[in-house]
Amino acid sequence: MHAGAGAAAASVGARGNGVPVTTRAVRLGALAGVTKAGMTTFREVVLMSNVNLVFAVLILFLSSSFGICSLLVAEIGNITLGESKRPPPPIHHPDNACKKRRRRKY
Picture (cartoon, rainbow, N blue to C red):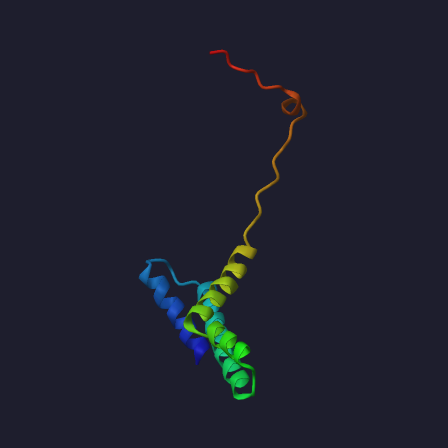
């Protein structure tokens, strides 16, 4: 259910921005929905067991809407930016390396 909701949200967002809906956007939306479902399920399972207060507060903070949004931005950003091309390294010419800068006289 969360995967379908994430895919639908990605589709609506793409249409709202006036760009075509791509399979990649729908896939990333579904991944975000599954990640959110997994995070909330993990929270419920951990909090049902007897954990100390510090760990419980940490889990509650990470699984709040702020924590889940930060996790999803990091996940989707890592997927998106991890696939981008790196710029080529700068080309160093031996002629340019040895030239000294001239000082301007004022």
